Image (cartoon, rainbow over all chains, first blue to last red; front, side, top):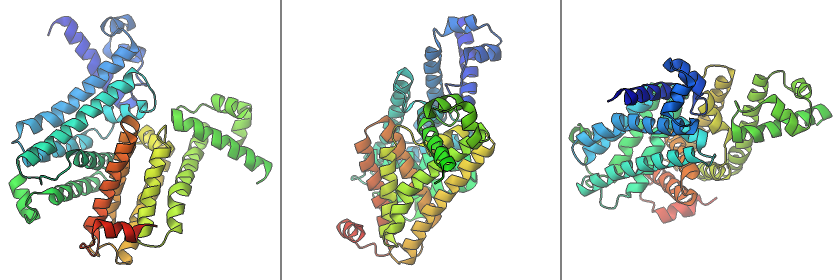
Length: 209
Length: 209
């Protein structure tokens, strides 16, 4: 990485940390310059505008999420093992980002505000639901999930479990929330197994990564 | 309602409308006074501080939600009919408040910010999850849902479906999102029926309010 790219990366890291706490709309170039020990014009030299910076932070947040959730799953065996890994890493992400998740915050800041930021958030979340849906489809291809399983429907329900986990982790008891989330996901998988006579015990065995 | 109470109610309605769009932190006494055609000191005469106003708006939002979702359910027959009515009204609320739901916004503004607002949001959401859980428990008492049904678990999963519906309604196709949400809830009920041999067709029949 050359010096320019390294500086840009350092600014982005600081901006991401601020935006996780205060939201992307709470991100001021002045505060960011102070946090990075730079002048405002120094920050502007790397990001043409506040909007460009916000878009870069959304991409940076998506990259953090992908590295923590998608990458470990892609290294796991194709099929149910991979799907379970994906969901376990997602639930871990919720736990580890309980004091502010950039993407969840961005959805709530921009969902009703048309513009480049909303478009970027929508693209990012659409890529993620396609990723979840793809992980379900592979587990259908490996004949672990039933051939009739609706991958988009399952991806929607998995998103729901993750969002309930997020909300209850933030507001209530995180451990209890995780127990509920794990049970909900297990039940979802059990209901869609190609061999529904497999017991829960067997299921845990064959699916341990 | 006397004149003072009527004015307070009018201010609250305006404040609620502003906060649904811009969030409770986006609520300025100046803007609110302008929207209500009053002086700032006039607004302060009814709400001692900005924080008091924000707490009153959270309560007002909770009341709107209760009138749209809880009240129609309480008028329905005890049991599965009532639970289905509650969830249908909740999903309708998500559709009708797609351009900004006060409570969803408040959860996201305050979940990581300790203070009186966060406490009020947590109490409100706790009351709501107890309400959902209670509706499930009644359907267990009427022997429509299986005696082993975990009411808190089901309430968590219903919350998840509503949150996924909220997110996908905001970002993607609202109609498709509602189809996914209805299917997810139907599946949840079917999996917990005390007579699991009831077909989906029969289920719709016995549960139509």
